[in-house]
Amino acid sequence: MTDSRASEILDRLRALREGDAPTHGGRVLSYVYDSGRDELDELADAAARLARPLNGLDPTVFPSIAAMERDLIGFTRRMLHGGRSVVGTITSGGTESCLLAVKTARDLWRQAHPEGGRPRLLTATSVHAAFQKAAHLFDLDWDAVPCDVDGSVRAEDLIARMDDDVALVVVSAPAYPSGALEPIAAVAAAAEARGISCHVDSCFGGFVLPWWPGLPTWDFRVRGVTSISADLHKFGYAPKGVSVLLHGGPHARRRQRAQFFATTRWAGYPVVNPTLLGSRSASPLAAAWAITQHLGEQGYAELVGSIRRVALSLRETVDGIPGLSVMGDPVGPAIALVADAAAVPAEQVDPHRLADALTAYGWKIQHQPGVLQSDGVRIPHSAHLTLTPVLEQGLAEFTQALRAASDSVRGKPQADARMLLAGMRALGYGENGRVPGPKAAWRLLRLAGAGKVSADQPMAQLMALIEKLPHPVSEALLSELLARMSDPR
Ligand SMILES: Cc1ncc(COP(=O)(O)O)c(C=O)c1O
Image 1: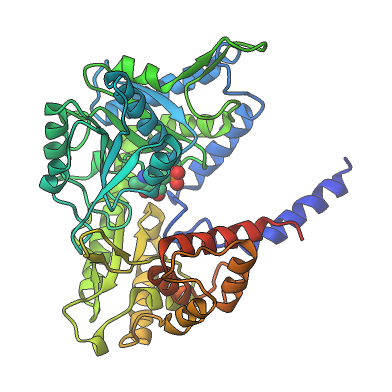
Image 2 (image 1 turned 90 degrees about the vertical axis):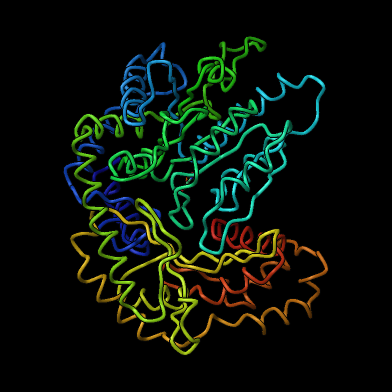
């Protein structure tokens, strides 16, 4: 290929990327994790490039992969106070780590229950959606224990639901929607007493909480914790595609082996897959390896220092904004903003209108629809903020924008989806359980003004609709939206 052809192709990609939300600088407070240190990105790029031709499918052919994995697993194990008996696997991300934790526990449950039956996955409502997906894929019943309106769950509510059919109980450190650190010690102790596996999902906080002061013990020091997930592609600052799943407790090795899939029953090469994938890129692994080598524990501690200063300062700022409050008592790098329930409606700041208004100031926070739980308690709609170290540099500007945007929407209620809902009902979708197929879903989306998506599109209306529609309908609409985005024109 000629140089000019290559540069023309790359120019086209650059042009496409211009439509994306900014990945650096902390202006997007979700999805991306910017340390604010350019040298880390450069190091990650160089390491990823070196490892790019490798295939993680077979570390016996490419032993550098096993060497990097050993270092990364060792680093994560030390950080989470796992002893030498703790073993682990590098996966492609948080979802894969969570899926594997559930599949492993399910397989062990089946071994222990030869009489059969259907296992249950016990979590709080606040658990990451990856666990619903795991229950769906691996055939478990998802038992979601309701949280309080502030997004926190009580240990006794989880413990009360523990029984012989529970294959795994999951607690989050912290939960993504609210930043709540769940009651890990009490839940793990109760699980251990009943012979139930207990997973701590620290995909989000795993590379932050080890250096966060004043927390109750939540890692492998807690008896009864049998596995922990921690994502290197979040606060490990690696590019997307890398997470760690560790197994601990008395039978850690046996657990981890239950996670593996091996077969010699086909005509091709002998297969051993520790994770869900076959061929695997080694680039994210190499990037994560290089970053952890470079930062070490001290480097992570310093970056957590920045996150903590941002978190403390933002909580103070929100306290000073009439009508807005922080949901619950978050720890670590997440906070969720809600309308202050103690304020009169004319004073309240709706978090989704705030999120939309902030885009005009160049900041993007994440809309989270409210959710009605099985006990009738609704966790209110909120706006999530992932707090990254780089935000410390722009904190004054963000604070100003938060105040100004709040002022601009104060007193405006949550977006009203009633007209749209009525329209959907008139078309036969709503309360009767009828789920639209692809064509109808697309028509409904266009009716809702959501047929086109851009990085700075207002979302409050769509979120209000999602919150009010029956789940199967809103899920069909969202699937349609995403599918259409990738349809070739
Ligand atoms: C607590 C928690 N668990 C699991 C996940 C899933 O991670 P991923 O998006 O890497 O698949 C996330 C993602 O935000 C998370 O916050």
